[in-house]
Length: 275
Ligand code: NAP
Image (cartoon, rainbow, N blue to C red; front, side, top):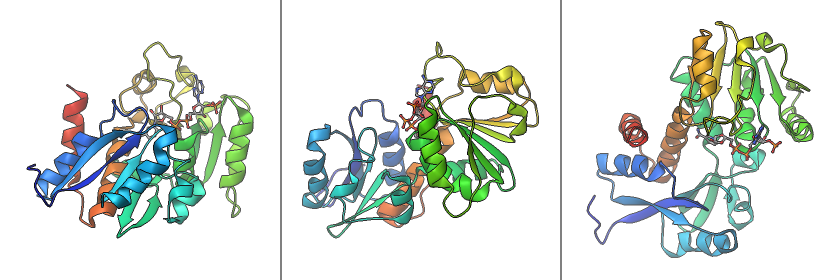
């Protein structure tokens, strides 16, 4: 992409940002569509967040993505926040509409798209999510609505209970587990903890308790030891790369109003992770 007088800017605010896979994915999409825009990583410390958000307006940026630790703390600096991001309590995408900064969250929808493209439909299914952090909140927003039942397990049980209360609004069935037993009661099991980022991590659950009728998902972007063990037990598995892809594709669409070139973005991501 040639930088010209018309080049627009978008990017990622995080702290740290060095390990992000988003620039390669988003810049591949801009290049493919000849859309004159550049996606850059910005290392923004928590104390600089307000100023950095102001710069989105000042520099007429298209918008930005947000990652740890800014997804929640950015909300007071925005002009509006959509219903989903408000419910999740976190924003991962800001769109600059002529100086009006609108907050969105594409993580939950991104996860649902990644299920959908594998023909995995949680409707009528019993779903278990392990973890009660930001990503559990984001995917829980959809799963609580669509699954027959949603169960949460977290090492900090109070946090899982608070999330279950929140997701139960509107009479949905969300329960909290005291322990990870009776794993066979679930059709879809999702790891939403960082366990598996390192090969030395313990598994988030006892993989021997899985059976081949179950689907096991991990939000981590690679084939984790959990997914390898689940496959060995005959389970269908899904890694977090699809969620990363689709949350980015949905952000691209919000910024540009164009259909994202998803396969171009997927190839860029996969090339990067196999490098
Ligand atoms: P988070 O907000 O920090 O929440 C992490 C959750 O995992 C918390 O519930 C925490 O429990 C639990 N946890 C952390 N360390 C643990 C351990 N050693 N043993 C058991 N439980 C542990 O993080 P997040 O944003 O939800 O992200 C979770 C993972 O999802 C990340 O590692 C990331 O790889 C992945 N992710 C992927 C995507 C994607 O696009 N694919 C997007 C977002 C996140 P406590 O409440 O007890 O602390």
